[in-house]
Amino acid sequence: MTSATTARTTTLVRPDLAPDGTRQPVVDIVIPVLNEELALPGCIKTLHAFLSASFPLPWRITIADNGSTDRTWSIAQEHSETYEHVFARSLDIRGRGAALKQAWRESPAAIVAYMDVDLSTDLDAFLPMVAPLISGHSEVAIGTRLARSARVHRSAKREIVSRAYNLIIRIGFGAGFSDAQCGFKAVRADLVRPILDTIVDDKWFFDTELLLLAEYNGLRIHETPVDWYEDVDTRVKVCRTAWDDIRGLWRMAWAMSTGAARVPVPRRSELAPLHPQATIAEPRNPLLAKLLSFAMVGVASTVLHTLLYLVLRTAWSPAVANLAALCVATLFNTEANRRWTFRRHGGPPLRAHFRAGLLFALNYLVTTVAVTAAVAALPEHGRGLEVVTLLVAYLAVTVFRFVALDRWVFRSAGPTFTP
Image (cartoon, rainbow, N blue to C red; front, side, top):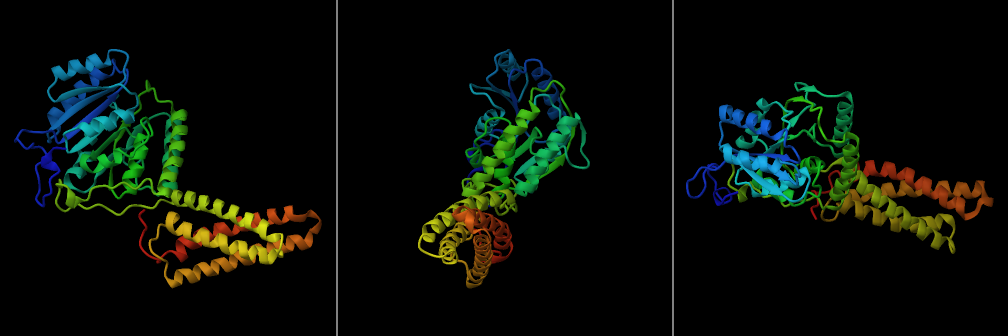
């Protein structure tokens, strides 16, 4: 962004004007390409004609070549010389995500967008997608092929994989967006650039990572239904890409659980807004991130509980050894979940302590009854049966404990904790 759009101000600004008064693009449409010598000429011709005829904001097209070995780069250079408002840049590394991160960082535009070179998405949806960013309604805008009013023509295989993948995101992360991978997106450049520095993936998972980080850190995502026609010559390996995406989701869940996904997104008061009344929502707390954090804390607590029980059992009875081990493990578990899973700062109030104590009593009752009954019923199996019984009972109570901590113990224990 230029200094005209990064200075503090309380008035509506002109993002299309540079400090010297020259006209800047408001929207920069990036076309990432890799060995697309056949598709690129038609894409630029069609897109340039469309924008020139019907797009009301100052714009430019950026061709981002990321490691082509055919004539793609020379064609990009030729088009940048032939067409007005077409810019070409070359990267030495491959990956759609890498190309977009670099091009978006360097763009002078207030809004940066991208679309696939095959133009599978109908261009009539472009202005409706960008409009909420200009008005201040949203900070991120995407095209969705899964809305009721979208018209999509693609194979059953891609339809099933896409819907299953997006369902995992919506259930696991509580995401409010419906289509993570549609190649038709636009973002507020000044608000998204800090997130770009956090994104790890340089390939196809870039889209999902961008959206999850944006929503997690309080940016609003607007969806525009699109008409989409599958490119039968696509090079995307659907199953392999889906597997890489699943691995990426686990990495994102870990980042959210540990606080690594928190990004210092600029506040509106620190930027020249495109719209003076726009605000940013509070960060989200996805279910999958909670579950993963709770599971990791639970594993650590279970190991601690079991080891302490084995040590104390050499001198004490099963009931006493279990009580002492459970006290220590529960204290660790509650504090770890308070800080990392449910993110509460400060000490929980007395009511939360009392409720956690009731859960502790239930945990102790269930595990003690289980291990004592096992020893009485099958004494010949020795210490091994005790340990197995203890583990099974403890894990069963843990499932109930998660729901109780989230919905009951910590529900009103204080504001969200930010590391």
